[in-house]
Image 1 (cartoon, rainbow, N blue to C red):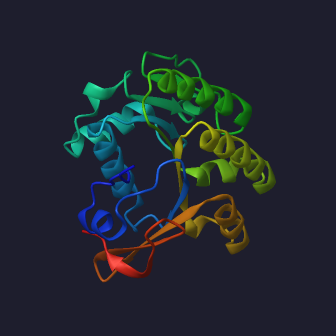
Image 2: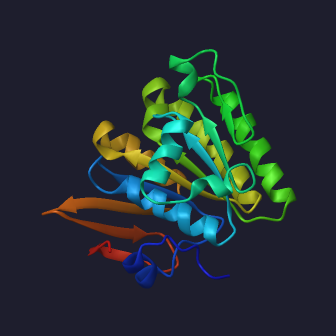
Length: 222
């Protein structure tokens, strides 16, 4: 099967894209380009008729949709059918918020069981429609702030293991500046491959370790 294209030309040319059914850890600080990487990946994946379960922990679903539209990504046409949002943020500030056809409002980052159940339900619906599925957690750092690392590790072991058995690809975004090195290393051990991003002199670079085509030295993201 052809790799999952990210929409970033240099990345896709050097790596062939991402491997389906794997768990990827996306590492970098807030200026590294993680957000752009994810948004480009979403756009490319939806155009290729993949389905996406997007887990939000640091912004509301309406803010996410606005960001896509601001970037010229026509996300609205995919909502409900191929793009569903699990909003694990909004209820903290707006307890009365309710679900709609494309966004499920969860109880907050402490309720990992509720998140797991909701994710399983969305994945099952997509899989029934015979669609390749991608789970994106944006971002894992907030779950680590509200829960002990051990609790989050166990959660990840369960959802990533279940995803892999179901043929689902998983992307875990983590802000490296927010966590101790041992936390990052443990999450690496739960992942099949690691994408590292960095900003240097105004340019962004990446490495990819653990995939079918590795890039071991930093190359510019174009």
